Length: 269
Picture 1: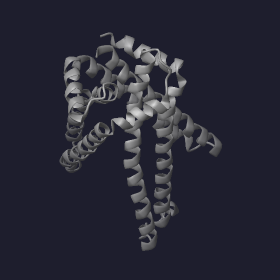
Picture 2: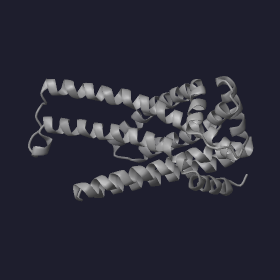
Picture 3: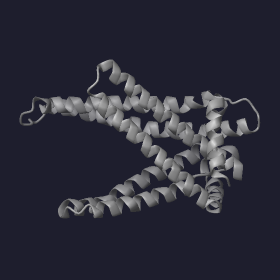
Picture 4: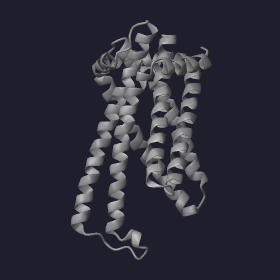
């Protein structure tokens, strides 16, 4: 399989069909709204503890803490909702790429309907991702403690490498599950079984693609962090423009990743 050809064709599709960006632009906007809300909570907590005054921190008013905890509960619920929305938008792309490959008009509403049709698969993947995050967090704790106690960062780096290898393995295993479920209309068990079988058949190519995705995502995140850290010293309008720009870049990169997945599946199925 010509990996570079798949990546190039996927990039070309984004240029030909710009409306494909819409699902990821919507989910990125929703994530941005939650981030702004969370930043507001952090600002209120800092103000309640006199953090900005530069003096000794004071215990916050219990009523303020109660209100902020309620806001944090909203953030938690919103994050779970966004995970679902993200999975649904991700599941739209197999139908979009299939229609493009078959020379049919691309329909966002049709793709959304097909994505909802695979809700059991999406719920299973969402539960697997949450479970992986919880288990991974628990796994990291003792290594973080050893790093703090000894000052030897190698403990933390070892744990981080193990988690990275586990994450890449999970991405390879799950790579074809959503396209199989959406395009072939398979149930949960069959989608996972067939997806796993395809993944094992093309594991070397999938590992290369996911490493590429990881580098792309890390580069996007680095651009986002640098841009936002530099933006604090700018005028307010410039900071807002920069904030919006990096979110658009983020949406473009995630759309590209979402397009490559079903493009590769359709090429090898």
